[in-house]
Amino acid sequence: MGAYNDSYNRSMQDPEGFWAEAAELIHWDKKWDRVLDDSNAPEYHWFAGGRLNTCYNAVDRHVDAGYGEQLALVYDSPVTGQLRTYTYAQLQDQVARLAGVMAGRGVVKGDRVIIYMPMIPEAAIAMLACARLGAIHSVVFGGFAPSELAVRITDAAPKAVLTASCGIEPGRTIDYKPLLDRAIELAECKPEFCLLLQRPQVTATMIPGRDLDWAECMASATPHPCVSVEATDPLYILYTSGTTGEPKGVVRDNGGHAVALTWSMHNIYNVQPGDVYWAASDVGWVVGHSYIVYAPLFNRNTTILFEGKPVGTPDAGVFWRVIQDHKVNVLFTAPTAFRAIKKEDPTGGLIKQYDIASLRALFLAGERSDPATLEWAEEKLQVPVVDHWWQTETGWAICANCLGLEQFPPLHGSAGKPVPGWDLQVLDESGKQVEQGKIGALVVKLPLPPGAFPTLWNARKRWHQAYMAEFPGYYLTADAGMIDGNGYAHVMSRTDDIINVAGHRLSTGAMEEVLASHPDVAECAVMGVADDMKGQVPLGLLVLKSGVKKDPDKVVAEVIALVRDRIGPVAAFKKAVVVNRLPKTRSGKILRGTMRSIADSQPWKMPATIDDPAILDEIGASLRKIGYAGDEKPG
Ligand code: COA
Ligand code: AMP
Image (cartoon, rainbow, N blue to C red; front, side):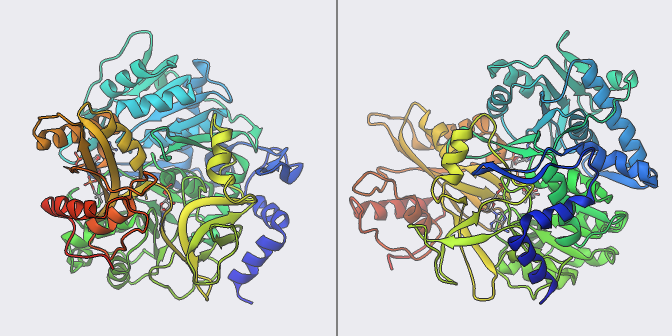
């Protein structure tokens, strides 16, 4: 039996033994009473009764073990031309001081702290400082608009907000402070204080009595020690798109998270302590939480924090330059980044200008990897390229090619095999397992392994409804797919209205709520249509209220501006079209799937339940006017 089968079977037959063994990889202040507490199923808790500190495991532990001089974090910022490095000892100093600043202002275990920061080392330091105090951080991605930030502030009710004066996008600086001030104005709860890092590019205006200067506070700070917390205490809340405008606050605990992520570094990524690991993502997303900050530091790696884009900062060679300069061993990014690079440098000529011999593997996630991109990456990099599948909720990979266990022949179009700990199954609508190779709902039999979310913040009922209710005893991933005869999983599409735009998870339902709020819009639909670079982009269809005389192009421009203003630039909502009517079933359900197939020029079938088939011709004509919908006819 191979190492993968051996490990997978052990994790299924004796999950408690399997994870208790993995738990030896981290430092515990007190060992657990029960490996798995199932007394409140389907809410499960790993390592109940155990105590630890996440920051101690990520930072101090390595200093105590004599690795204080090893590089912990390298900040490489082509958008500012800056390079900064932190050894584990330097990181410890900064994190302990920042924890001291927050503690001095009354932040204690269990308090929430919002982190609204660009990709600078202080963002990671802020997360670790919260973990050090047992405070619960909630990082909000910089590309969201003030109202999205406000919703998160209201839900998390933070004692403090940690921020910086600006973020830097190619060609423009984003002033964070006016966005934050507006968000606090809109939020129902107000933080007691804001700690702001002034970046040289922009000096923010401070509100006396509420806003504190980061550098000043750090200069006089007293380092704070690590606070021991329960394994089951929350480490962070990360808001992610749900099916409505209300985001879901995914909760991560301390113990299971530290165990699973540490285990994953050896077994999935084949990364040893001392190696250099680079997740080219953003700390605002789950990939950034797990694989820019926590996992590489738990595993005593050097992590790269990159403030730039795969192209245009300055060119499509920047990834290779970073790999060369910092001797990166493993790179993790989203397929869209590779599509962007491939578009600019199709022959891979820029790769040859750099020495990337240190690179051992490339991991891709965030959306399905298209075979053309995988082939290109394999051919140009000559290292294993692994598509792996996971979600904000799961915190780490459900399926992968576990390079540290046993490397399988790659299968393009598949996200690999279930990772040990994940009992992946495919069910039909009635909850029965489907035959191998048949598509159904991808579900995970409970309990989920350590590291997965135990619940949603302030929303246990919603958690149950969204994930646990449809198939009792299983976690609903909301992805559809299949497992083939060789055990490879294929993740095909979401079963809800979530779309993936450049690896960013967005809700079309949330966008529809914004469009519907426009005074001239009677009805609308938003769907994700195919895009060569971003994978998917949102496309809006609008039906105007009767009597509206305004130029339809003007309404389109206004709704585009409205989405940018309410959700943020990250929504990438740039296309919409006015139509006379929307196609619906006889029971009134909008046929988004059929319209999406028409827009993407994919074969489609006339839905048997359609109210008026002629509408689809009208929709096709409207879509063709804006560059979508080829000549595909109903199949
Ligand atoms: N703060 C403020 N605005 C931001 C932002 C941030 N942190 N991140 C993105 N934006 C803005 C962009 O400037 C852009 O604005 P624009 O409409 O004015 O051009 C918009 O949000 C969309 O951004 P993005 O989706 O990043 O598109 P892009 O065209 O700027 O870049 C890629 C395209 C493919 C290069 C880029 O999406 C990328 O690097 N993706 C990697 C994916 C990734 O990291 N995914 C995380 C999961 S692994
Ligand atoms: P997020 O929560 O932002 O990480 O987005 C999770 C969603 O992204 C999943 O539910 C999938 O729909 C999609 N996704 C992530 N990784 C993959 C992958 N490797 N293959 C297919 N879909 C993926």
